[in-house]
Image (cartoon, rainbow, N blue to C red; front, side, top):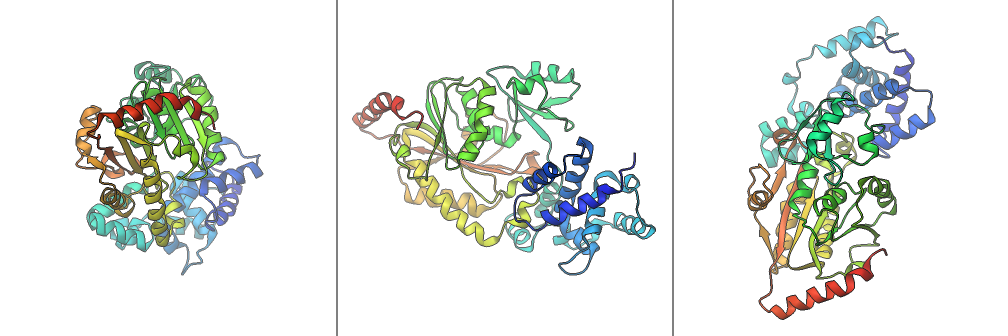
Length: 442
């Protein structure tokens, strides 16, 4: 079925706004659709996918759409739509436009220059080549330039994986178990989930398999005190709460009230009562200080470049700048240092990012260990074995889209060495028991 010609004009209009990169693409699209409520679900889907196709293929498309930095926005919109729905679905095209799209479609992309094939800015491509080598960098880039699958986490408080698969099949929605996340399901298409009883009742949450594995390696147990230090909208918080079987105390810290407010409806659906959202001003907040030395597990999913999420957020590679990485490093080191103060003797601190870059990952951990002799690295292969996750890793968790079909994730598990004097340990345990209730809902 052909699309109405107006769709091209609308795609061109929103694309012009998105390519200014003044805000994330999903925010711009959401605002545009609110301003144009006449669009149905199909039209919104086509326009959004066309925009994302342009963002994924920007280097290649721009080269064909016009010279220099001022490509024809109409040609870019045409290329995005053709990539998404095919040339035959587009109505109202001139003969020249059909010829243009046919010519681009026939290009053998394997013959293009490497950076154009990678479809990413030069600085990022060079970093990935330096880190992975050119052949693997191109393999990684090719997968980053494809849409991410739809992954679900089954809420073990409310359901089990087999029952959810059977219930989804009635919809009918096909889903299959994931290889690494024990509660994960991969949906084979991208249906709307919001109106499903499973979703409304909190039996499922949308969460990438890599994020689920990250939650798992925290190793949170029943009855423990756990902190999700950069909780955001709470995807990992909810996973941790379920792993704790709704016992103990789980603090969800974040500096953004807006992000924490997104956790509240998810928390209500989840059935968890052990989660305590806490708004903090910064990593040295007094609310954190009161819990110093009392926490069993701390997860720091640090603010980062987000370059591991390019399948979902292809605009990030164009919005991110190389000098911002250095600023990120300072923030990451400071947050990790602040979070470390919470960890009790023998407790664990997990540092994680959704970045692909060593300078946000290995480098931060190595710097931390050099200045915190009371912590030691727990090799990731040991942690994965503890959690019975069938992944081959060395010192760190490094999940990569082209190897594991997940978003790009890094994690390191750090353990505070237990002190020899039993008196210190008893003192800390006594404080935790006496003061935890007073630190609840600030």
